[in-house]
Length: 269
Image (cartoon, rainbow, N blue to C red; front, side, top):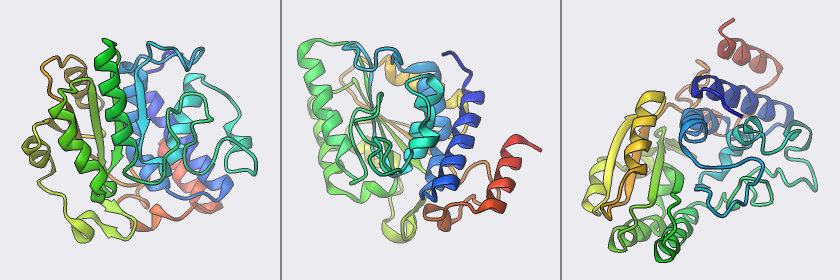
């Protein structure tokens, strides 16, 4: 299914909003912040096949911020990996759990315990290198999970092994579970930290589709032994004015009035 990122990102936001409202689910703010990255990655860049999710030649996408599952389930449904997530999300016995599950077609790894996906992605990238495979490994991190030491061990490991097939995208919305990133554990200057660990660091507006596309294209063409980190500056709750930059929407699910107001904003009514 071919869809422009601008259209796909809107569909992701609307579907995430619907899922969180209907199921009383959390983490909507982070789902809205990462929607544009997902739209460009899946809509323009990644080699994935909805008809054959396990295709050996596919790019591997590890969604480390598994709590923002509503956005990931939304993009995969829009691409045609499955249908009917609305009826199954967060239901007892369903594969569509409230953090992403590898039982869902298109999901490489169950995540939610932060700091696990990047080490696995690096191991996958190393295996691909040794086997001479040409596919890329993309890992989407939240900013708060960069508090985890396992990520920094991997950030040191990747350039040592010349993993230029590994691309990290940080959804840098600057709000984590208990406050702003700056208050809890400051990360800035984040791009320079990656560069000090011998990564190629690219800072972009994470809601600018052209900038996301250009950064991913640069990363995809890398063949110099240097892994790429894309620091995507985003807004938590992006697209809904009363959710933007609000810590509460890390946890809240929209009630009926909030759902209608948010949907109207997204649709430009």
